[in-house]
Length: 141
Image (cartoon, rainbow, N blue to C red; front, side, top):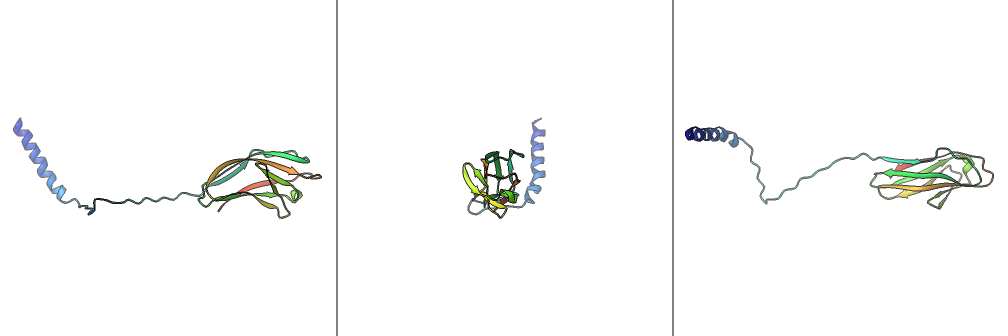
């Protein structure tokens, strides 16, 4: 029984020796090496508002929360696009007023890095405004 085991080990060594000899040799002189890994992540940006319809009346009207997400490493900007009837109104972003002018668009927030945030939005309507529309868009920088 011992002879068979011994012979089996010798046979395995003899069979594996040529395979080891044909394997490529990798040597590192300093004993250190570096591995570089890179990947590509698509830029994804989203902005949404809780309220889709509100009743217009003079004074402040809650639009709910603006939820924003953008993974652009350079940041992002959120713009409000609005109808001409809202040209003299203001959007309050976490209490900070952003006046709406005649251009039909206004930058309401800007970040210089990727981010996730929730902001309170209100529309401050001047006297005599009958209604209008507001939409929000996010732009990666």
